[in-house]
Length: 184
Image (cartoon, rainbow, N blue to C red):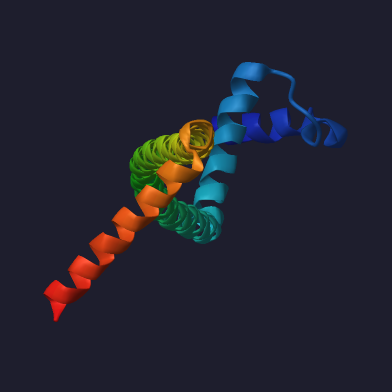
């Protein structure tokens, strides 16, 4: 009973105002308060925290799945772009090679055409030269013929007298008669 009395007496000594308030003793209050707060939070917040964590987990997993899908799409697009790039490079190389071949063909054709034109011009030149030579030869022959006939006439006229002229006519008439009788 002694301890009960002590308790009552000692509780009488406490003021009502002192029993409510902040205890500033860090070692006593923090450990107890923390234990109580953690206990209450664990008991009541277990479901809320689990739901929040599950929602957060689903959000993160969904974000990761979306990121992986976008990553896969990006890889697919990259592969398509690389394929298109390779095709474009191959096409460009084909065009370049075809262009070079076409240039070579056209170059050869131009060289061939230039050679043919050169040959034609050479032939035309030679033909023109031959024509000019033939024309000159014809003109020279005509001049020579004219000069020869003129000289022959001059010589005949200078040597021909009436007696010689009459003899020549008689001679040619005799030849014509002989030819006429032998033909019959």
